[in-house]
Length: 265
Image (cartoon, rainbow, N blue to C red; front, side, top):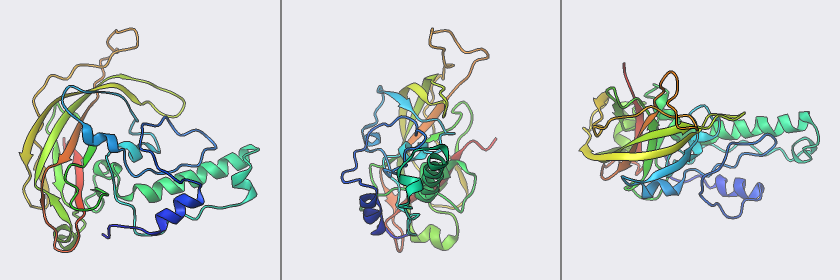
């Protein structure tokens, strides 16, 4: 995988995006053209004891944009922005629908190497960090049930050749996160009051296939309603955040990849 896509600069400028500011964003609203940020830089400051006010739900069409500190811009060109009356005036439902459809097309293109690929149970896809160099310090989030074993496919496992060509994660810091509440709205159910409970450093093996991901032991508590009462029945929401500490170097690329992170059972 190549590191840069020169077309993305032209694409962002075409949409009037001069400066990209990485910050938490609320759900996508109808009629707003989605502008991928290719990561949320604040994830690099994750540490035990911090509380994250909100994390987009996994069903949010645009949520994967903010589930890692960075992710790789795809090599193929971005969908062409249709500068037509139907996508610029926004005066009726058909025009709004055209903007929404194009936003979803942009998301499908942009999220090729996003955190979404960690949960699709497909070794031919994966997350790749998107910064210069080997990506040491980059972070990616995965929603898993930390009360059960968690497994990871290291590297880009579409093929043995691509596995070796790209970097694989060697040393990793695994953070355990727990959501305190959910905030359902008309678009999604984001998680709120997400606490970083613990962390553990581990070394992943440089092999294809699944391997057990070490997760720091900690008691996960059920989420609560806004009045403080426990959900009925009890609902749990836990995550792991993986921070790259060192890598197994690839033979061709400097992109550091993970194919999957999820519970097998």
